[in-house]
Image (cartoon, rainbow, N blue to C red):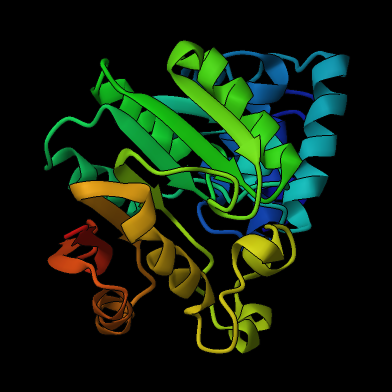
Length: 287
C-alpha cells in the first residue's frame, strides 16, 4: 500500500494513522494499526477511542512532532513499552526504562503462585527490576512489607518511583545490591524473576529484546542457570522455616531448577503454569 492509498488528508488523524500503519507493517511490526493508534493517542494526549470519532480532524503540530519521534523509535524496534514509558502488570501501571526488563504477562504466574500461600508479613524480591512482582504481591496483601533488590541503582530507583505512583511506598523499600548479600533473613516469601537465557541464545532473540532490554537481566550464563544457583543456595538463610520461594522459569527449565533447589536443601512444592500452559513458576519451601 502506498501513501496515495490513504483516504484522509496527510495532516489529519486518519492520514497519520494510515501512513504510520504502512511504515510499521513494512518494518515487520505486529499489529501495526493498533500500535499506530497507541502512539498517536499518546502523542495527542487523548484516548484511542477519541481518534476514531473524527478521522479528518487535524493533528496539532506539537503532537505531530512528538508522534514522529515516537514512531521513529518504534520503527527501530525499540519496545513499545519503552516508547510509551509505561506498562501494565497485574492491576498496576508501571513506569519502565532501558534499565529494566519490561514486565510481561507470563510473569503474572509468579504472582498467582505466591498468592496461593499464606499471607506473608515480610517479602523479598531479588532482581526486582520495575518492582512488578513485589508491588503486585503487596497490592494483594495490605499487611505485608517488602524489600526489592536489583544490581542496577537505576532499576532500584525506578521501582521505588513505581511504589510511590501506586500508593505502596510506605510498605516497600528498594536498594541496589548483589542479590541478597547485604540482607539478613526472616522473610516469609521470596520472589525472583532472574536472568535465565543461555548466553549464546541472546543474540538470536527478537531485536526488541536483544538490542534494547538490559543484557544483565537476560543472561543466565552458559546453561541459563547461574542466577538460580546463587539464589537457591541463599534461600535457606533468607526464609523462615516453612516459608516459600517462588521463582520464574524459562521454558523447560523446571526439572533443572528443581534439582538445584533439592541440592540446596529446599523442598519442591510444584510448578505454576502461565496462560500459555508453560510451567512458568517454581514454588519451593524452606524445611
